Length: 307
Image (cartoon, rainbow, N blue to C red; front, side, top):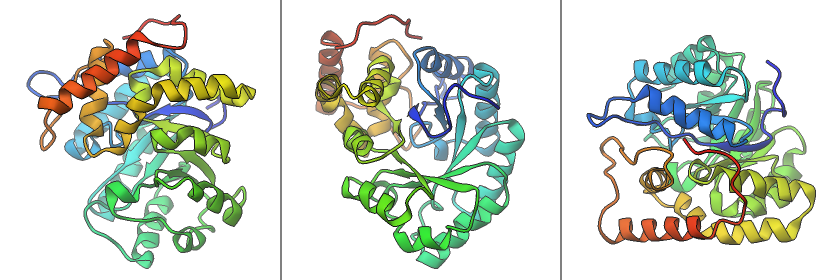
């Protein structure tokens, strides 16, 4: 498949999975969300990541979402499927299913719940990688998943040719420099935490896997474009405008917050599956206020239609 930009470059929103009132998957609405993001200029899509509520879906539902995305996007941008399973065998089966369906790459997480040793983490990643020919981005997010993909783990996987990238969501921006100093160009590094995104790009990240792009894609795309053009004043201005919302990506209720922001912006529904519940009380009021303030002060002229 040939894409306008290389894999792991630019803005990759972690697309949400949309639900009907009975909390079954609304496939038409999910495809609409995906297509609208591509229409607004994103460079790729992450499917069934944290924001896609991967672990709230059954295996057949996950495959249906992937099939719908392949159908809706039609090769316009790369599609990256999140691999977030409780066991290695399930991760292997899902990776094989995703490859057959036609996605372009995988975002591989540690096995859920269990906190592994370095040896166990390497074995999990290696087993999944050996089961597929797709390129793989490992997802490092120690605050959310209690597992640090440390340098020893990456060194032990350096011979696995289809492990090619790292999504870095540790809150410490020094990690970008340390990764690049340690491994050079062996792994592409993508910024994975919204409120450290510009710092990550400045320190050498090749792109940004984003949560709040789902609500404000035009500004997200322009932020990265301004950075790539060397227009630091514009990039900083957009980043500062965006920051109250970008902080939401670092909280445990990021999925509910992002979906509420999508709903306010006319791009989707806030419905989530349990154990998540929609935001309520003061938290809900705060997020609504922040989104409405951002919408009222948008720094980029809007030329595209929302979903």
